[in-house]
Image (cartoon, rainbow, N blue to C red; front, side, top):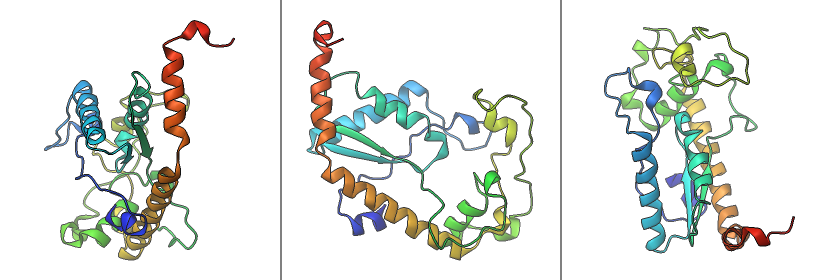
Length: 219
């Protein structure tokens, strides 16, 4: 985030740690707040940011476990009138031109695999123990047999019971540095577009006004 705002200025709130992590409660050290607490805490946080003058609030997602939670939270902002807009920037795309070729299967590279371990090699190499990278498998266990359009919350545990998906031993600092630079640019581009956006708040206000007179809405 710091690299992104060096490209496109924005006020950066301290790191926010209280996301959705129910799928990893079997792992020691996991702190999984109730869904109500997560949503209330995030709502109170953005409300206080808005009260202090931040009328465009950008949530940059850094965790796959939040892929459903954050869009839900953003959608819930339409429940009651407010004078600010919440934007969610999703996880980075991994198709930037010039990206180093991966050594492992990209379809299975989701948690602590080649990409995420590479990111840690670039950001905090002191926390990476490559000598342990082959001590367990991050292979898909294929323990569910359901159609692709069927969702169940246990899907992650069914596929990756050790909360490890991919091949961490394939990681390189080169890949991590490339991805971090690319992600920073993606965030900076999003911030630039959000700063220029005047329609979201206008449409939000228009919408809230119409919600007070639903019978007057043209059919």
